[in-house]
Length: 359
Image (cartoon, rainbow, N blue to C red):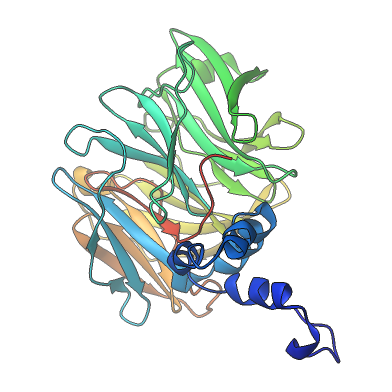
């Protein structure tokens, strides 16, 4: 941003180029690198990548990536009609078997994915097509569905990291991958022994305000539901309560980062389903709004529930399309916020950036 009284004519060419190119779309940055050696060097610096990323985190740069058995496609989001735009087919740049790729976490244009046939973890930027294998010969970087949990985050030193929580035969291990040093290390995790049980379902981590948040829910009616918090700079864990929702039916909590504030869509019920939106203030949950009860739906659709809010409306979605629309009196989001993984379709919402999966 220019100081008062300073015009573009007063700035050196290097600064002008920097200011302009940090505002162009990610794919255009890639093309601009071929202009000359000076531009290539400028656009490859960490300062440029960081500032370009911060200016790219707007709703117009969000895309939906969906994977089925035959294709992987990327769709723009048309906010006026609350729908997907025309798709473009994406070719995976890494080896896979019949699109057996699960997306576990996403942040600033990077996706942490698992190759289901080998259990290997990768970091992948679908905009630049760059990727990085995270698995190692000493068994780090291998993910098992329904037992492990993954969270992607950035620490105070601007180092992108992956937190991997592994449950193996009653033993819990916690490991952190650093993009900066390209290696894994173990960190301590002190929590209740009962959370090691496969009866507890761990969500993917949601990064918000320097903390990764996981929902940990017992897999039956009336079971225990908590939120585990990981401070990414102190690398300390703590447990906070779940929102005070009824425990007489199924409970599903979906965490979303909305303008750097943590929110949760909490779904409860058995035959009829109720969804409330909560926000975290300190360690306490405050209810933002409630929706009317949703008419009975099949259990298979109940497990496919995702949500997004845009243009003042709140949509309850399944893989088959819109299930329910709730008109909101306020417009706090005006953006698209679904869960990370759609059962049936695997996918994510990501922002087009030039952030690299490796240094």
